[in-house]
Length: 185
Image (cartoon, rainbow, N blue to C red):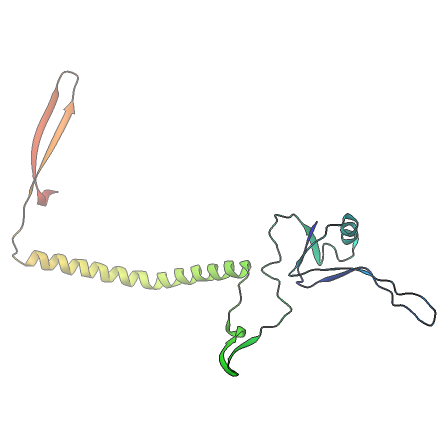
């Protein structure tokens, strides 16, 4: 049975160990512990699984999961191990230093959704400010091009397009040829 924890290195005490006492002559009794590694543990023994489910922190610190279920705590779980500075050595001299603190961490899915919503909101606000000015510039540009084209005595190319209009009646097909100038289209 698979258990998932929100704490990456959780240690669950199912029965505590009792230290031995040499004065009284009592032997030491070992305890029963379950340790999560990277937030998950697979328990094969059904008796231990029953004890885990009867533990007071069950459903609070850890939960039961299917083998195929995605870890719900994965995005929020942090390692207990701190980030390290690794120095590569070459013949007794430091060659390269890599600082893990400079590597940005992963964002949780909740953070990603919030950032996307803020970006969309910001884009809409910027668009409200920019679009009217851009539209005015485009209209001015188009008007200046059309007015420049109408003022210049350039040769107008007129192409004749042939449009064939067919009407189907019960008795016969009527075909009508029409010629339209480019300026009328």
